[in-house]
Structures are given as C-alpha cells and as structure tokens.
Length: 270
Image 1 (tube, rainbow, N blue to C red):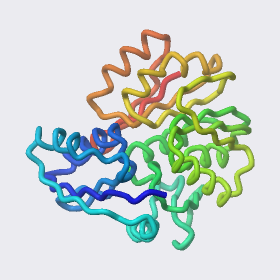
Image 2 (tube, helix red, strand yellow):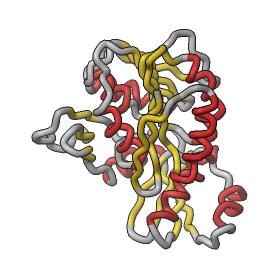
Image 3 (spheres, rainbow, N blue to C red):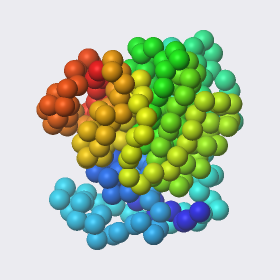
Image 4 (spheres, one colour):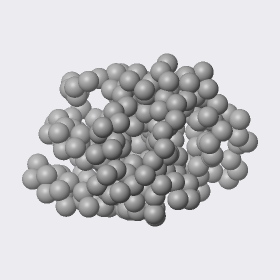
C-alpha cells in the first residue's frame, strides 16, 4: 500500500467542488472529502503530478496545500471521516462500526477505504435510486467501474442471479472483494481489467465511471446488452448529457429517464 498525498483546495461553492471532483477523478485521484469552503482530494504518491495539478488549478486561480499521509495511517484517516449514507427509505450504506439502519429495505456494510463509490457522492447515490426502479430478479448484471462494489452488492440483494463487477485499480479490486465477503454475497465475480471486453451478454449494465470512459466503450456496452436490457450511466456532469444522448441515440439506445443531484446526472437507457 502506498503513501497518499492529501491536497486541500480552497473552494467558493458546491458547484466548483463538483467540477473539481470530476476533473481530478480523471487524473487518478481516488477519494474526496467535501466540507465548507474546502475540498480534500487524495492520490497515491506515485501518481501525484504537481505540474498537472498546478495547470488545472491555475485556470481558476484556486489555492491548495499539500500533505502526505503515511500508508500505515491511511485507514484511520478514512474511517474517521466516513459517515453512513441513506438513500431515501430504500438502502443504507454504513461501516461495521456504525449501528444498523432502521426501517430500510436494504443495508450494505462496507469497509471504508479509498475506493470510489461509498454512496456519499451524488453519482453513486443516484444510481442506487434508479436501481430501485429496475427488476433485478434472476438477471445477469455487469458493473463497469465497480469501485467499492456497493452497486454490485445492491444488485445481488435485489435478486440478480449473476453479477460481473470490474475495475482497473488494484485497490478497488481488493476493497470490493472484502466488501462482497462482508455482505455474504454469493453471485458476484470481481475481475481486474485494463481493456473492456465482454464475452457474454447482460440484462442490466451499470457504468458509474466518467464521460470519457463511457464514450470510449459505449459500443462494447451496447453489444454486451441483451435485447430488451437496461443500462444505467453515471459519473456524468449535467453538461455531459447532450453528448451522451447524441451518441447513445445514434447506436440505438432509447432514453428512459435522467435524474440529477448537485450538478451530476444519472441516465437510464434501454
């Protein structure tokens, strides 16, 4: 496990924070903590490039401070800042050291590490909202960019009979595997991939990742979707919607629904 760089950026508003999260995610930043007037972003030391960061922030005249979190201290830092998340009366996400939720249909327990997808971010939250409206019973599901694995875990809890969850990051694979075991899931396969290839078809595809990766792989995702299947796309800013719609309609997807939260969107196609 590597040491992590913690970058604390002074921000003016929530919209500015959301844009930075999207931009920094594409640069390899793996975790974020949002607070009043500040955004903290985390990246491994070997992936940190101060020149690229300065170039990004100089465009908006934002100031930042840099510190290092030693690897042996990382889990304590992350856990100290992890709070339970509740999506309506549908599903709650908590760590093992939090008390169980009350009066929710589903609960997911995760080990709060660096992987993206704890439910705190608007994109993960919205995908879970959309998942409530789909019938997963007996379905085959593909989770592209699984992060912590919580969307795959929720798919199993909703009745999916098989779930393939993939990511390109070792840390995510390790954390997702641990979370699957914690939740006693039996129908999820975790794979690390660098290039997306689908050798079978799926009833439901979930891609909570980012605009560029989605557009680069949209033809593969389309070919991997069963006839009559459903696909949920997120990791997208509101301004990405037109570009996503144009490409998805061109390849034959039909738009079912778009929801938004804090400047982010999740889109449902079939």
